[in-house]
Image (cartoon, rainbow, N blue to C red; front, side):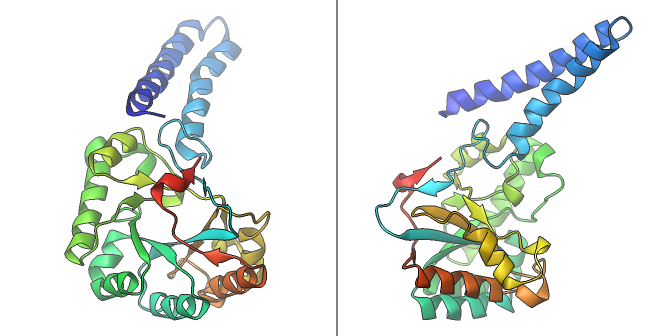
Length: 261
């Protein structure tokens, strides 16, 4: 969706939500069932656009890339981590795999050497907000959204990296995000499959989830850092890479023009 279309949708959702609330108050005493529908119906529509990873209305988030080869894009969120990142870089080197690390600004500020190591190894460093505000990003003000982007960009640029791609926490969108990304030259990136490590007890289970329905052009989302259960940290990504190699897949970082919804 173009910039004008995004703005129109934002104001459409705001207007419908407010109109629904007003209408619910007007009919509440005489038609309580209708009032409930008017009150909560627009909320459901707004929630879909904010929280559903597949929703493309507020912010375009490509979920695949075009390729005629057995290629996937491995993306790793929530780093850099002093324990995991060095091991992941070694693991990726063994497999000849390239990946994109969507890093948190606060973590990058603590470990700028790891940011430089990721880039030096030929991988892409991308933006994953400055503080990873999972619970509040959806309702953040325009100023807060801008700060999350600018603070992280400042840290990464100080480490010698100029990211062009962004992923919000858990793919959660914000009414003001599209405009903020455009102003900073950032492209939002989603995924087609993820490991859901926090809900898994074994590395093989993570790989099963991430590679279910595997096809060329998939964007795989995995994680590093302490939010991942200790028993599967790094190991889950190792299993994924082993299975990809067994099936003849290569991990690449696609060009922007190859991304599709």
